[in-house]
Length: 146
Image (cartoon, rainbow, N blue to C red; front, side, top):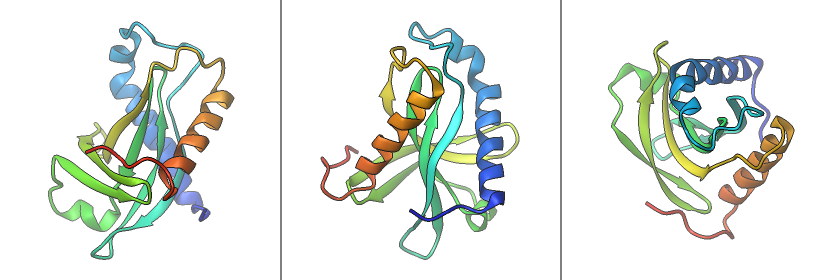
């Protein structure tokens, strides 16, 4: 796994903060909201796409769910982005939906686990995210679902 730059880590921290600020009220309304969890962007790594663009792909943990997230590169921010993206990973193809946050951050996301109410800490959530991303990024797992 490739190490991210300090700027990329800072951007991911800001993304998690912006996502939390936009969604926290609606998250708290979900019956399986877990107050022991926070919003955090974890296990991101660069993934080169056909055409030369590089995405940052990883997991976004919330108090309710874990999301597979792909962040477009800065060069793709110049043109409008599609409402969905087909993300080809070693484990299969995943269909992700576009979201723009209030600060202008753009991401594609797909829920990969909902109802995280049984997790007791962010450390446990981080370990789960790491295991999920290892499986998603491996070629010997079950194929992704459009």
